[in-house]
Length: 129
Image (tube, rainbow, N blue to C red; front, side, top):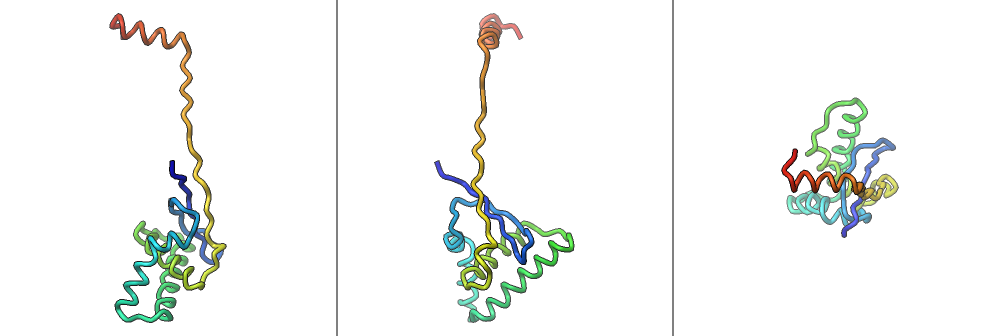
């Protein structure tokens, strides 16, 4: 059974968003989400300094929208996560801005009394409803 975690991202000491993941290693998550953005930027000839400026500017825009209580689309949160993880890889943001919590496994408690089982059997056998 795979363990699942929730990754909470804080930017400038403000909670921005959360994502569900299977690892507590932010660099492993970067390989999945942020690496593609960096690859695309390098393929277009954008240097890492301009990438840092662009990623930081996008994170600042989402931060301002969060502070001003504007609506933020799910796709914007996904791009924010990619940008944030790229900035983490470039060591522009602190790794303490990410918090991982293990998801609680909910167990169902199905205790049925013997009396209830007999009632269910009688209903099934005799066709009572």
